[in-house]
Amino acid sequence: MRATWIACALVLTSLVGAPLAAAQPATAAGPDPAQVVLAPADLDGWAQTQAVRTETWGPAAASTAPNAASQMYAYETDFTRQLADGTQETLTSRATEGPADLRTARFQAVQHDALGQTPIQLPAGAIGFWENAGDTRSGAAAAQVGGLLVELHVSGITAAQPVGDEQVANWLSTMTSQATNAPDAPPFDWSQAVPGQPVPWPLVLDQASVGGDWDLESGLQLTASSAGGKVQSVSAAREFSRSGAYRRTLDSTATVYDSVADASALGMTTPGTAIDAPALGDQATAFKATESGDGDAPEVSYTVNVRHGPVVITTHETGVADSLDSPDETFTLATTADTRASSLLAQ
Image (tube, rainbow, N blue to C red; front, top):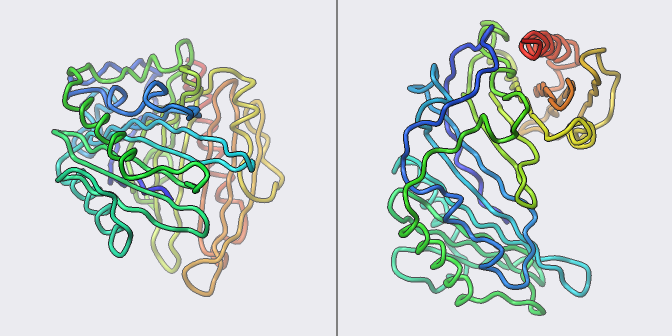
């Protein structure tokens, strides 16, 4: 069990024709959440699997993102602990910086999830609970410290390798102490996340690219994934929707990998059944997936991944099967994204 991330509604202006300029950091806002989360030195017997940095920008900063102060900024670290039977326990620590209403909403969501569950004994002001799942249990804990929300999530916990209230309280105390004592830091410079590679945010589709039939649902979100202390990829994403007889959603993502090999190995596969892909970029793949929708009609998704060197441009469209009965529109949008990327990457 993992808590869902806060969903921020964002609007971003068009980047058509904008060069792949380096982003300058925004003004300092407080401690870097990366200095607040748990690190390998804090966890005996646990192995870190990855770290994920995420930042989003709201409508007020649409024309200047990512050069402006963001709406939400988070950093998480993920760990596993192997058990003798081959299974594993997982642990995630997360620190989120953002407006008080977003932090409070996330804290209240944890409070809501705790209803009817076994409480974790924590200091006043913090919330935590255990939830049983067969022979294992999961746990969550959260606290607000200054302008940060800190969270801890564990799952797959067994009697063979238990985690108790005291341990959760100690881990949460480590994060709250670090949140209190960490010095202010300049914002993360996204242009230097993968040195020597293009930045991804100008490569995603925008309102002008998709046309007036689509409504912008979210603005710029940047995500950096790291392992072994090295950034492996940086992604930019934007979401659109279209109303009418049937609702559709469109996700446009550009991911810059550390190498061409990583882009080919990690960025070109999507859940679903492989279908013929349009001839785009250096390499292209396409997939179709079908799942039960909220009503009687199933939902279908088409995804096209197009690689340009170490960059993968992904176009993902979802709709009710009765309306999205072929990949033609997704292919057209993917071609638009490819044309955009080809032009910008050539600069």
